[in-house]
Amino acid sequence: MIRKIGKFSIQMVILIGIYQIGNLTVRIFHLPIPGNVSGIIILFLLLWLRVIQIDHIEMAAGWLLKHLGFFFIPISVGLMTLGPALINKGLSLLFVLIVSAFIGILSAGKATQAVIMKKEKEKVNYHDHAL
Amino acid sequence: MITLYSILLTVSVYHLARFLAAKYSSPLTSPVFISTIIIIFILVASNVSFDEYIPAKNIMTYLLGPATVALAVPIYKNRLLFAKYFGAAIIGISIGIVTTITSAILIAKCFQFSKPFTLALTVKSVTVPVATEIGKIIHGNISLIAAYVIITGMIGAMFGAKLLNLIKVDHPFARGLSIGTIAHGIGTAEAVKEGEVQGAVAGAAMGISAVITSFIIPYLIPLFF
Image 1: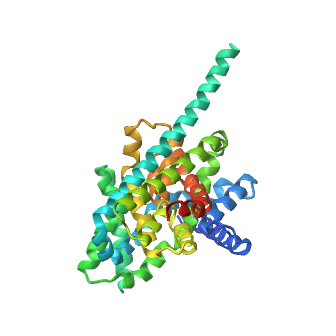
Image 2: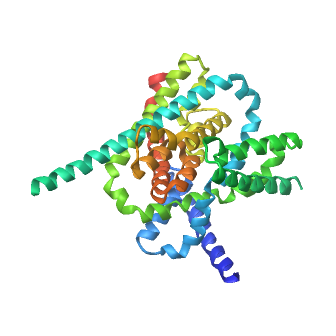
Image 3: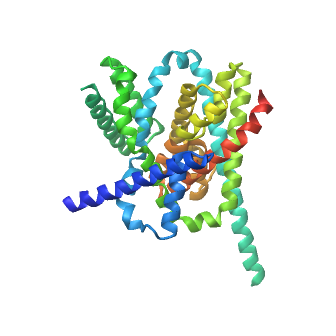
């Protein structure tokens, strides 16, 4: 149990460290991306170049991802400060956000699936041809 | 004392919400949505202002950065899938961004929204830390932007999977990509629950769409304002 906690803590420190390095690189090189996205890229490269093995971080990473939603809750609670402004425009604002989100989700999903299907079909045709 | 109370409240409501979501699966039991409503309600009822909640918020969101970085793990595990569908991903993300921003601005114009209310719509699908950065560049209202982003994330998390079922988008790559592009981290948290591929793709799509959005917004804004 204690060994497990120790392992978990070390993994967590590694992830926090990479996140901070991500922030630092963005600031130093004035990159047009946020620190967390830079952190994703750095960790990906470290895994890819085998500097870090998946087992070195998987326990903490899995736990964080399982509870990813939790970290957005305290930020969302901030909506309480916008009460009056939102209630004033409430319904029309909600309408805009819902309809545009639906349109975005439907078109992104349909477009991606269409391109994937087209690619897979071409492959099948190619095989047919080969036969 | 208030900070401890706020943390205990948030953590216990979150666990209750997860329990509810597992028992009654519906858009309304989406954990971020239902927890936020319950917590705001309890804070207001117990006379705690958001300013008093902020220290607790800062402690609890400390791990959001590392948690986002952890998305590299499922992305790495699915790297061959990304290499295979790279073209589809870029096309899908770009179409998603352009259609959602354009439709939002056009509807807002019909309702005759004021400029700050319309302008903030351009970044509503971008993950919170990037949206606020872009917001500064385009001189938008930051707290309004944060509200749009969060509400959009909740909408995507609550209805995304159902919408995609409706139009028979069943490919896990397309599903994750769509949710991550439009509903950023909050949607990704929901996609992770649907499956590892969906979660990995959503996380990657969130990052890529943030980058693409920050590049296209300067060209998109003059078209509408």
